[in-house]
Amino acid sequence: MNAHGEEAPVTVTSDFVRSYVITGGRRLPTADDLSLHTLVTLAPDRELPLGASPEVRAIWDLCGGGYLSVAEVAAHLSLPVGVARLLLTDLFEQGHLLRRAAPPRAQSVDRGIIEKVLHGLESLYG
Amino acid sequence: MTSLIQDPLLWILLVVLVAAVVAVMRARRTNMALRRKSNDLQSAREAATSERDRLYAEYTQLNAQHAGDLAAVRKDAEEDTKAVLKSAMRTLQVLADEQQLIIEKSQRRYGDDEQVLGDLMMIDHTNSQFGRRAQGIAVLCGGWLGRRESTASVYDVARSAQGRIKHFDRVTINTQVNVSVASRAVEPVAVVLAELLANATNYSAPGTRVDINIQAVPTGVCLIVDDAGLGMNTEEKARATVLLSPQAPVDITSLGDPPKFGFAVSGMLATRYGFKVSVDSVSPYGGVRAVILLPENLLTTDVPEPEGGAAKAEPKPVEAPPAAPQRLTPVATPGGPPRPIGTTAGGLPKRRRRGSPVAVVPSPPDPAEPEFNTEVTASRIGAFQRGTLLGRDTTTMEGPQDQ
Image (cartoon, rainbow over all chains, first blue to last red; front, side, top):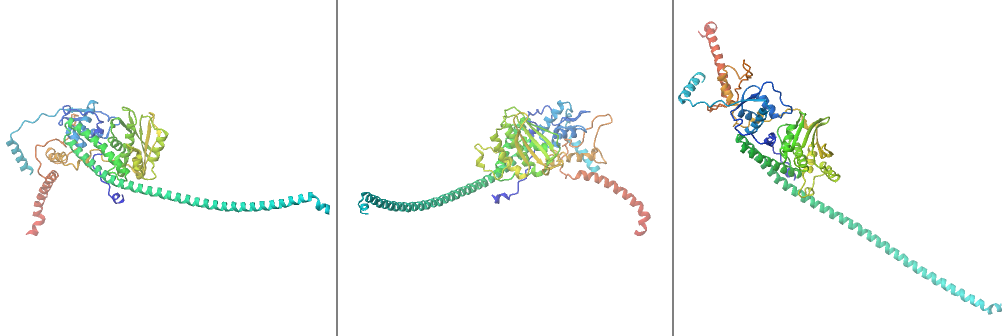
């Protein structure tokens, strides 16, 4: 018993609060509602809801300054996108968030032009 | 005289006298014999009694020795069992932890697909409960819990505990307390709270809620778990009280089948880490009120890194966003680091540049380059300025020396 008791305790590195606790075990919204590229920002003159979770507070801070995409919010919170999406959907339904659809995809541009621009930039700054 | 001699009465009297004397003599002899016999018997009895006492003492001693031996053997067996179980549990704990990490990674990787993520969350939930069981048995066997490197807010400790039980969705957490639990106590408190929550949810009707109220008290912080179950009877309360403040290691075989680990685990951890657990009051809903009292020395006012903060993002180089904006910033706003962007002149919120999902330019160069860029620009301008100054100075100051 003693021989084993001297082992140093293992360090636990997994996330402390599990994602299903953050969502409260609720159904996750579909990706159609808020796609990865959808931009969200805080609606003007909004008060942080009372008893907001740390994650909601973090979203509040992140989105207060300008538009941020759903993917960025998730990355900053270090949460799976689906979880961030649920939190954002909540805030959106409560009217705290504004969202803007993703900008249309750029048309494919001639590769030659891009290379020329790149070379131009490189000669300027490289 | 003759008349007297001839008097038959005298003879009769004489005969009677002689007879009496003989009788007395015989009686005396009998008496003596009886007394001797009695003495013999008494000494024999005393000998028998002392023999009996000796035998009794011997019996008691043997009995005690037997009991002692039995206890020693049992203790040895218990310790051996515990040692084996402990190392087995350790393997399971490590496996559960590794699995949790893998699940976490998968959750991030497939986070955009709500169905996959939902399934991964279910696996995660089951794995957490599995981990808690392994932790509980390990603790009872004298093993250790994994240790957390950082402090955690009491609220997060409560949420972590909530994630380790089956019916976590019945638990609500109310708190106004903004303190953190010292890193060494984070895991034990979470495990104990999880055990209390498991009891609370298992012994109350499905669908009823279980509340965690976190309150600051003069000596520390209280975590109060209230359920709406039937409560405990006096006998159960007494048993719980004994288990919650154990005087000696708990005998794992005494916990019933199926074993009820909760209170025993809580008691062991509370004693080891120096906090108090009690379950002897009644909740406002008529069920059990369990209270964990964390003393000041297990608390800290250090604000933990918010969930998903910089500390968490660091070990995951996959998440490139921090690098991307720095690459782009010099181009977007030349001549300065990214300014905090507020609103435009028209009052519209401005898009933040950082973290924008621009992945058009592949980034083989090292991440140090962006900062290097601004520095290069600055140093070039500086060099240019120095050069012109130097050039002008040469004619006046250094010229004579060179020539």
